[in-house]
Image (cartoon, rainbow, N blue to C red; front, side):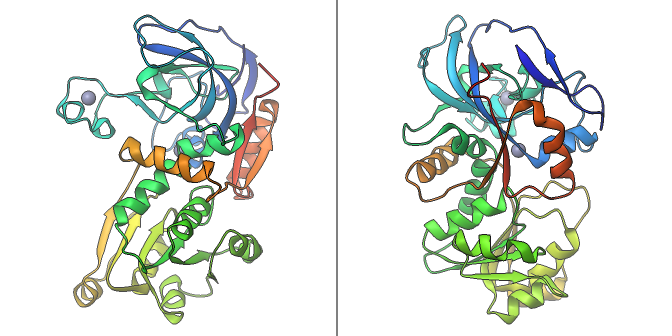
Length: 336
Ligand SMILES: [Zn+2]
Ligand SMILES: [Zn+2]
């Protein structure tokens, strides 16, 4: 099978023929139909935050057709349309797995062990697969398995009340879905961006107001009334620190950023506003199911740049300079 292979940090990906493996016990093999490209893939490619044994096949937004089953799999059949997220299975024995909170498992099975979705086929843990609603096309389904899942959990972790005003900081692959989720849930939504050229598309996705940051993200947000909930996927820690001053009293900032640097909080601001800062990643599986249902119902729609697998180096170059609008997806429909 063909795969886009990472051979070294910041080295061009190579399209290679690699062995198509058979699924082991409890595993399935997917014939990949689409595979989204995430900011985290660029972190891996840059060797930041995590390292994987090389050569490696990346990709953790895969969707496809179940093509073969290993021994002992129940609940999946050949031909099923499924996708799988980052954590495919917990270790099964730790306290987090015992509590059915595999997200905290220190030793989970992920694409790192099984190989990722930038390939014609992928081995996955069967219990990690989630069926894709019939109404949802392959290309739109793929980004739900990381971007959509993450921001759905962020929204739920933010626990907004009906009528709350929601601001989105960071309007990329994740943020553009967070915006649409908040809108679908009936909130007034403010998109905060640095890119003037995104203004029209963010409006078309449902933003009631678009703030193109001038000097200070928080002051700019406060100037238009502030927000009860800020969902941030931005890796700009200066703006994350700033935006806290745009929170309304007892508001909440939910951070989903992948960044090493700290952001800062002025204690007197926290005291006077009594706000909450919460971290959020992909939480319960139900959040993924919910975002798939929202997409299938047409309530949210990812805006995609669609590529062939052999365009992988173009995709990573565009991601590196922040040019992707808003999610890049490989279309593997005609290649397998
Ligand atoms: Zn991701
Ligand atoms: Zn575990």
